Image 1 (spheres, rainbow, N blue to C red):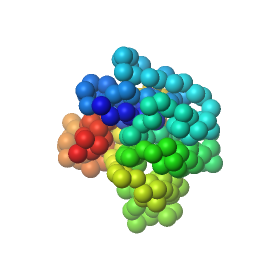
Image 2: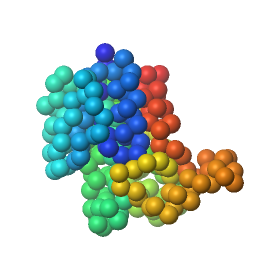
Image 3: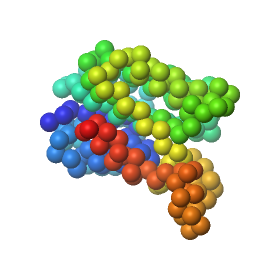
Image 4: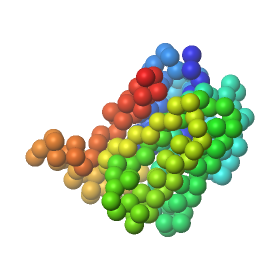
Length: 202
């Protein structure tokens, strides 16, 4: 079985990735490191709670057995972080440190949940895009055997902490007008959790 680690396991996409992994016999044991413990329970789940995210990268090398696959669905908003600088520390710096530590630990496959439109025409002027681009570039430069980046649109689905209640509700109800229009703007979280796992399985 494949040993896997998941970061961002309590978020909209990360929680679905974890659920999918727990239900697939190919994967196990499954390790998580997060600020909050995941709600899922399973004999093959080894969850570690660490509120100090600066310690996460150093914890990868200590995982036993070491994971061969890492899923990274870490992400926050400026409002949740408190400022753009604090958001950058999580969405960029934390993820880049995670990538470097994963490479040093011998991880073979690294899958990252990025954002749709990250490399659009105006990306150089959008801090959020710059964060995601920096992480994507770090994955490429690390030279994993398999470096996978998923770029969903706005994520629709249940969250422990909604990022934008009005906007998510509005986009979530667009299917009443046009499902195609909804798909152009936003994506439900659970398919991306499953697609992420399928991407690793090939």
